[in-house]
Every structure is written in C-alpha cells, then in structure tokens.
Image (cartoon, rainbow, N blue to C red; front, side, top):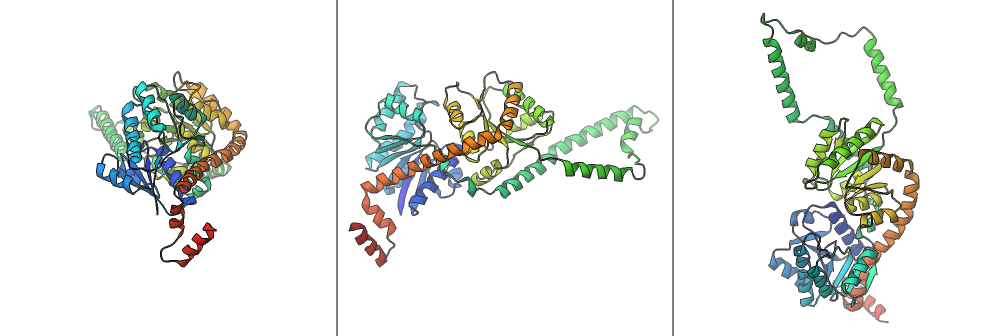
Length: 457
C-alpha cells in the first residue's frame, strides 16, 4: 500500500476543489492501483464524500502527525500558493509542508496554481519552502514564472496542466444528467408551500374586502366572476387540445443556457443585468438553468435572480455529488460562469463557456479562454445585459467551430495533466525502488519473488 498525503486549500464546499481531488486520486490509482490518498481538510465531512479520498482535520495535531508519519509521499495540491486572502492560509499550508520535510518525507507540488504573491512575507515564505520541494509541477506557464521571480531555483519546475483534465468525460452518465434536469424542471414548476400559503392568504383577504363592500350580503361581481367556470362550446375544447398536441409535436428542442451564480459581497447590480439578458434569451426560445457555485451558500443569489426575471427559469436547489454535477453539465448547450474552475469543468464536458471576469483582461481566466478558443469574456465591472445577450447569441452561432477547436486543445490538456501523475510516480519510484516491488508483490505469493528476480536481471 502506497500512502499519499495531500495538502491544499480545502476549506469550503467548492466544486472545483472536489473535481481536482477526484482527478488526482484517479490518475494516481491508474498508475499504481494500491494507493491510499489522505487529505488535510477543514471540512472533513464534505471532503470524505469524494470517491477514493480519506480526510483528516488539519487542525487536529494528532491526526496530522499520524498521517505524516505513515505517509510515503506528500503532495502540495490545489491553488494554495497565494496570499490573495491574506498570509494566514499560505502559512498554514507551508507549515504542513515544513512538517513533512522535518519527518524526511518527499514533497511534490502536483499541478499547482501559484499566485498572486503580492506581499513581501508571502514571496519570502514561498521562496524558502519552494526550494525544499523535491519536484514542482504547475498548471500553467504563469505559475512557473511567478515561482522563478520569487526565487525558487533548486527543484525542477515542469509546466503540466490542471489535474481536472485527467478526468474522462465519458465516465459521466448523460442519461442521469437528463433525469436530473427533468427533476429540476418539475421542482421549479411546482410552487413551494410558502408560495401556496401566501396566495391563499391574499385570496382570502381580497374576498373579504370585496364582500364588505356589498352591504346586502350579495356576492361581489368580481368574486362571482372568479368562482364561475367558463362555459366551453361543444367541440371547442377538443379542437384546442388537438392544436396544443400538434404544436407540441412541432416544437423544437430548446437550447439550454446554464448560469453558475456566486454570492459576491457588496455587489447587487450584476444580478439585474444577468436577469435582463436571461429574460431576452427566454423570449427568443432559450431555457435558463440557474446553478449555485457553492451549495448552499449561493442558493440565495440564484433565487434572487429568478425573482428579478420576468420570464420563467429553472434552478437547482438540491446538493449534487461531483458525478451528478458533471452529468448535469452534459445537458447544457452553453455555460456562463464567474469562476475559472466552472469554465474548466464546462470545457471538460465539451461545452462552450462564457466567462464573467472579475480580474483584468490579462488574468488567468481570460488567458485560459483564449487558449481553448472560447469567446472573449465580459468584464464584471460595468456588465451590461445587451453585451451579455449578444455574446450568448454569437457563441451559439459558432458552437460547432468552438467545440472543434476545443477538442484539439483538450487532447493536449489531458496529456499534460496525466504528466503530473507520471512525473510524481517516476520520481518516487526512482528514489524508493523497493516500494515498487513491495506494491506489486502480493503477500505470500511466489510470483512476487520471480518478478523481483526478473526485474533485477
């Protein structure tokens, strides 16, 4: 059994982090099936739901110490090497790496994203600990340049790709995605108990007010009109039903736009712009699916956008597993999101993505969209409904061209992503060749001795 410990920025229910961890363990297990991956996490329960992953509380010193002592190799994962949220999280992450080095464990950076490193102490910490890594693989050229400018020189730095691209989109069930979509449609069309209760209260109040205006206790004309059922001429109802059935038969499949929303503190105007663009698309024949980026944190912003919209929309309200989320993404035609991990997940499922960028045009999300042949993203600042609407329409018209280019890029991204696992295992087995023999040999089997002699010769 090869025991691997992984340290990263795993603190909140984040679909991007879940996808990275799932891809990491799948890649390593494909190269060495007998691998046990343990993750240091602030959310042990949610992290443990990821297939093939065990989690320990990173604030439990005894659990951390035991994991490090029994680990064969320690991985530095995720986008943990940055100080955008302050130096505290960066210091905590590098402290785990320092403890691993103290116990003599090999440390490998696994397809990491690096930066920004804007503070003096942030750069100094990364330079000090980065030079103690045994091997560094990063997910893009920008991360390598940041490390080099910071002063990391000792270990080799190899540019690979985001670990998520090692996932195979064929493993996600499209039929399950369609079933989930139909369930979301049914739940969105069904009014909740609060809406039913509010409607009943308003109806009772209106009836009471109208009745009070009739001193002779006769029924008010408006109430009587509401109580009456319209008389349908004989045969007319059948004709309407036949027309509706014929229209349903001729109805074309609606394109589906998935919008992944996120709660942004102090920002409210963008919701109205997204809602206005979505309304116009619905009137053009589109269907709009509102998805929370984090569950349940971002459920409220989805509900607010739905309330602002004048046209009907559907929204996800249940917590999905990682497999279900990818299966649901297989049903959308276009994906709109504010986070780079969302855009990567959409690209993995071969869906054209539109980004709403909060950084400048030279940011990583913009570069990623450019590399993968995605349409130019819109900026969060000054977001306008008309601009967003036109971008969705133009992207839809170029869908085949975008997907064709995307397929070519995905081949390279998958190969580069698998390179992180290959380099990690190659380095480890070159340093500890006896581990390869121990893992391949089954206990009490004479075949293991034969294999050992063959490898020796």
